[in-house]
Image (tube, rainbow, N blue to C red):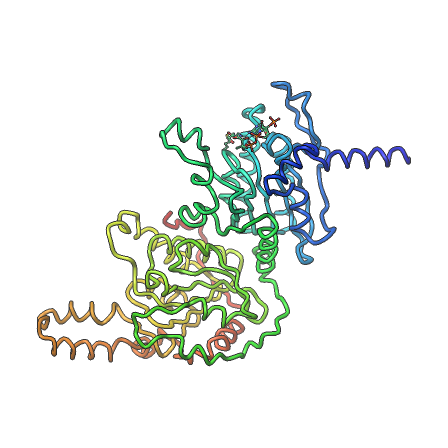
Length: 510
Ligand code: HXC
C-alpha cells in the first residue's frame, strides 16, 4: 500500500511538472506564469480539484508515440471564486506548446459538459500554438467539439476567456464565442493566421503585437473586452468580474452585502451638467456616484469610448450600466458604440441582470464613413437588443435625447420600465440650431427673427416637459436623488414578468 501511495505521489509530481523544469523556467523568463500557477491565482486558496492529470495523447505519427507527457498540454478542473463554483481549463504552453490534440480537446469538453450540467461559470486560460500539427484532422475534430459546446452553453452559463500568451489558429474561435475575452499586455496575441502567413499571402510585414496584441484587440477590433499588465492582475480582475455575474441564466444576480445606503443622495450631481449645453462632462462621475461603494467594472473601456458599459451594484445586487459619454464625440451613437452596447445589453438580458441607462446623446453620427460602414444595421442592433430585453430597464436622461437615439436608448416606447429625466434634459427631434434652420428656413438672414425663433424652440422643446406631459417620462427627478430613485425603481421591478410570443430565435441584424 505504501509503495502504491508513493507511486501515485511520484506520478502526480511528474504530471505537475508539465513540460519540465527547463520549459517552466523559459515560461517564467517570458514574464508568464505556468498553467497551474495561474489556476492557483484564479481560484480560492486550495480549492482547485484537478481532473485528468494523467491523460496522454494517442497519436503515433511523426514519432509522437515516444513523446507523451501526462496532462497533454491542458490543466482542467474546478474550484471556487469567493466560495462560488467555477470550472476552469488552462493551456500548458510547456507541453507541446499547449497545442490541442484529440485527447487535449476531450479534457476541455469534459469540463465544458460539467460546467453546463452544474450550471456554473467556466473560465479558459489560453497560451498555445493552435491545433497539434502532428494529429491532423483529429485535432480539428477536437476543436469542433469545443466550439459546439461554447455555443450550447452561450446564454446559459457565463464563459470567460483570458489570453495570456499566443492564441492562434483554432484557438481563437472558442474564446470568440465566449462572453468576455481579456488579454495580458505585451505577452498575448490573438490572430487567425500569424505574421508569416500574412507576409506570404498579402505581402504585409507585421509583428505579432501589431497584428493581434492586446492594444489592437481592445481599441481597434473590439475582439477583447479588457487588457491587463500581467498575469496576476488579469486573474484578480477576472475574480472581480465573476463576483458580479450570476452562476447561470436561472440563478439571478449574486447579492453581496453592501454598506452603502441606497437612499444616499449626492448634492454634487446637481451641478454636474454645465450651463453650456455643448460643454462636455464626465458621465463616469455619475455612474461612480450612483453605484454601491463606487465599485464599477467596465467592459470594453478602451473601445468606442463614446459609450460606457459595465457592471456595478445597487443594494448589493448586480446592475448593468449603459451610458453615453459626452466627453468623447459628444456621446454620439456610431456603429462601434452601437455594437458595443448591443452586445452588453444582450449579455445582461440573457443573465437576468437589470440595466440602467444614462442618456445624453445628440443623435447618430452622420457621414459616409458611418453609412458605408453599416450604421443602419449596427444602430439597429442596439435598438433590437433593448427592444427584446425583458430584464428591468431604468433610464435616466441627464441632458440630450435627440432623434432616433432617443428611441434607441431604452425609451419608454421600446420597453423602458421606469424612465426618469433630470430637469436639464432636452428631449427633441434635434437641437435648436438645426431645427430652426429647417423649419424657419425663410427667416435665415434675419438675425433677430432667428434668435426669436431659436428662443421659442428652446423654451418649448429643450426641456423634459413635453415628454413628461405625454407620460414618456415617468418623473422629472432631482439629480442628487438619482441613486435613491434607481434603487427604489429596481426594488419595485425585481419580480418583473414579460410574456413574448414563442419563436425559435430572433433574427437580430448581424
Ligand atoms: C505541435 C507545437 C505547435 C503546434 C507549438 N508547438 N505549436 N507542436 N503543434 N501547433 C511546439 C513547438 O514545436 C515547440 O516544441 C514548442 O511547442 C514551443 O514552441 P516554440 O515555437 O518553440 O515557441 P515560440 O517560439 O514561443 O512560438 C510559439 C508559437 C509557435 C508562435 C505559437 O510555436 C507557432 O507558430 N506554432 C504554430 C502555430 C500554428 O500555426 N498552429 C496551427 C494553427 S492551424 P519543441 O519540442 O521544439 O520545443 C489551426 C487550425 C485549427 O489551429 C482550425 C480550427 C477552426
